[in-house]
Length: 219
Ligand code: E4P
Image (cartoon, rainbow, N blue to C red; front, top):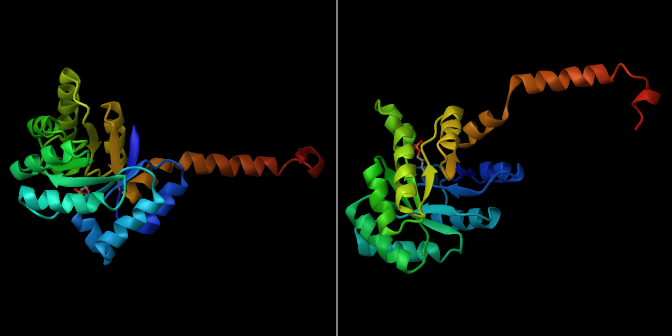
């Protein structure tokens, strides 16, 4: 499973990229607004750091304006995936953009039938928002499993990005469900890595190592 980071924060992106596990970045208008910077300059900077798909979202609501915005965003670089909301106009825009070979990430997906329509329109990526579904008492991961099954049934190439991830179990379940990608906030990435028994184990090994003489330690 590929791992994207779900942030527009340059320090977090650089840090995650330095771990050697980062395959891409997703942003959205809320994440960009937190950075208080020019949107295009921010996306350009992210594009220079990460050699994988970088999602940047349109804010227009009608198809012609979405397509226009998408073309400008795609002009930033070859790895830009334009995020388009899962509406009727969004589908129309995705169809046009897929013919132009512009990558799209269809966002705000909350049902498997929405996921089916996005694939039919030619989406490169589909982003089911599992955390927001869990928040309202649904089991978000069921949508991921259903979309996975539908895409397998009909051979759709659209890649599933599990989005709106809140904790490590979401990442674990995404991987078990066979999702193509999980987009993970930085704090959750850190939680995936950390285990107290690893830290305790290192301490114990180093303490025991110190029991050796200098001659015994030499290698
Ligand atoms: C994904 O592309 C979105 O940016 C993100 O996962 C939304 O998550 P949230 O529900 O935490 O805002």
